[in-house]
Amino acid sequence: MYSLMILFLIIVLLYLIVRRSKFFLHMMQLEGYKQEQYIRWLQKSNRAYTRMLRKNSTFILIMTILYIIVIALLINNKGIQLLMWILYNILWLFHMILTLKTKNKKKKKPLIFTSRAKRLFIANFMLNLILVVAVFIIYINLYDNDLVYFPIVLFVGTVLYYFQSYSIYISNIIIKPIENSINNYFFEKAQEKINSLEDLQVIGITGSLGKTSTKFITATILKQKYKVLNTPESYNTPMGLSKIINEQLNDKYQVFIAEMGARNIGDIKELAELTRPDIGVVTSIGPTHLDTFKNIDNIAKTKYELIAELSADGVAIFNYDNECLRKLADKTFKRKILYGMNDFDKLDIYAEDIEVTKDGSTFTIKDKYGRSIQCTTKLLGKHNIYNILAAVSISIALGLDLEEIKRGIKKVKPIPHRLNIIDPGTGIIIIDDAFNSNPIGAKAALEVLDQFKEGRKIIVTPGMVELGKIEKEANKEFGMNIAKVCDYVILVGKDITIPIYEGLLKEGYNEKNIFIVNDLDEAKLEIEKIARPKDVILFENDLPDNYYE
Image 1: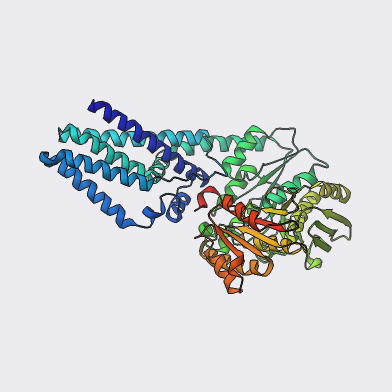
Image 2: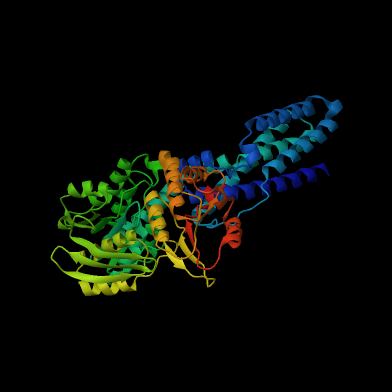
């Protein structure tokens, strides 16, 4: 009977451990299986443990000491073993209730059991199982006391349950050599495929802001003349690009557009070595991912890796209005195309006669030879004109004429979650800019919101993340800018939005018009209370699952 209880307990504990390990596996996946990024998330996270345990290390220490004392009494004092056995189980139950989270938030990007995720999951399960068996074997070789088996199993299971955050980390280290070998295989296979397609034109696009939008705009325009394959959504890592190249790219395509993302120095160089781009575009340099890059100079150095890897006859394209890029462009001696909206005499492609409204933009695109086309787009914001200029520069480099380009621009559709308007039919206008947020993008979003003259302006935001040391100050400034535009503010997350709140108050904003909620579901409830027809609601940034409180 007692053996059955032990077996049942092990099964229950393994279930709890596996259930918890899936949460940390999900977080590891969201951090791209990068150990440094995962540990950084774990140190900052408020999701690994309940608030009570997270903020009270003394409680954890006391509980651990009590466990050890009770187990010691169980082993060495037979007269009170039953009493200690009962006390121990009460302590365990109390502790577990405090560690279990009762509210499961709806996931925006759920855990996907890819082959890599499965390997990590199995490795972690085996690690937990080995630890349990090892401790149990050690114990039964030292002591012969059946009554203590139950508490020992409970204790080991509880420790493993509680520290699954680090168990996943260790498991990721253990299988890293296997993953590196697998990744290298697919990387080299993709590289060989790219090299075999001799007539393929490869375009690499990177930048702190606008690279995804530029990619889709470019693909739309180039399809007026070429058969084009572009990476979907935000596939901008070595494995993401390798997957698309290996599975989708073939000799039917004439142009391949690769978006290139980076969090560390050397990331763009690796992607450029994979794709061997003929044309390299840098859309902007700004304060994004400063938690890993540390400073703007490192960001500039990393983005320029794309240009450095171009062949001698490659084409480098720069946004010349960006101060950091201007310096990089001036030191580049490869063939280059400069675009912007200022200093026309220095530019190859530029836009003027710009009219930006809540419905889109009209503008004239000109080149240094005096040729021009008048264009209209439904894309919102002046920053999207920069993205269009980048796409136009690429198109000219690939031989499209201005009429083909004009037709392509007219066909460009708003990109989901990047400042596109949604009309739900309630009379309330929604601006969806939920994909990401950085100081430049947030400012652009507020400028678009300010174009609406009817109705009240409401913003829903958790603020900006991954800005390193400037994050607090940037969010405070964001709050100050919000105060100048918005009538109501809904802040998502009590702790993370404190700097925005401080910025609002610094501008003398009415506290009664600020609502602080825990998640988007609660935000929607507040919207239902305050919104009315003709109001405009901006959803600015939607943090990934690993950032929510």
